[in-house]
Amino acid sequence: MTADRQYQSVSYRPSELEHRYGPSVHILRDPLALSLLAKLCHRDVVQPEVSRLIVELYRMLVHEVVAAEFPRQRSSIPTRMIQYVPQGIYDGEVIAEHTQAVVVALARAGLLPSQVSYDFLNQVLSPQGVRQDHLALGRTLDKEGHVTGAGLYASKIGGPVEGAMMLIPDPMGATGSTVSRVLHHYRQEVVGTPAKVLAVHLIVTPEYLRHVTQNHPEVQVYALRLDRGLSDADVLDTVPGTHWDRERGLTDHQYIVPGGGGLGEVLNNSFV
Image 1 (cartoon, helix red, strand yellow):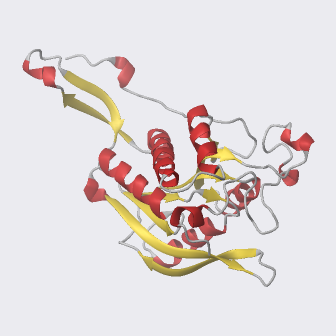
Image 2 (image 1 turned 90 degrees about the vertical axis):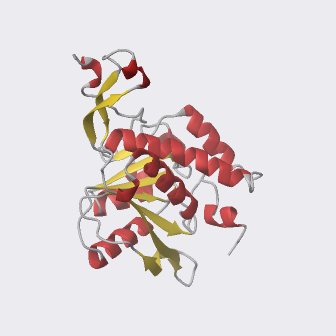
Image 3 (image 1 turned 60 degrees about the vertical axis):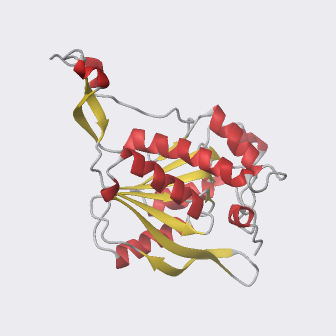
């Protein structure tokens, strides 16, 4: 049987915002996702709508990440038509189902995004190769309330990460300290090197992107939106990254503007 050539190599890149942050940064250009994200961040939106929106948004995000970044394989898969004609076979590229994947669940804002990502991957990949790890982290503050980093208080990690696709679903990429703390812990305490590290966010700031691209150039960053709302008006008229040193998306207490507030607090109705 002759296979249809158009499916033998299926290249894919998401629609992305133009920027000058470098090739490891992927800010998606999706009007539907932006609409749902704007609703999620609205001051009047509370539970249970908050959780429903996060589920929808992370399914969109992980779809793009898997399609763009995960390994593929050539497969011949019989369809229901095989009982009638010998051509009833799909022959082409699909996501490689035996890809190993690790999803890092970060308490507390990252728990629901991680579960959504984990469930999604179990639909696409062989579940035996998909794992969810858990880390309890929190912001560390100085006496003035400024963020100084991220503290790790507990972890439950299920084994090595050698050759795995590692996803870090964290809704708000504000300073980059969380990603740094996660990667430091895995390098120091866990055997193996991931095939890829994929940081998956709803919103990122220029400050976050500077930290991650400079300190962790191996990380591929995916986000639905870039927030640099505290930048000067002339900077906001330029392609993101043109005046990176003048872009600002964080308040003095490291909250994102326009942002969505403390999403971990809103998710859990626990404002501490």
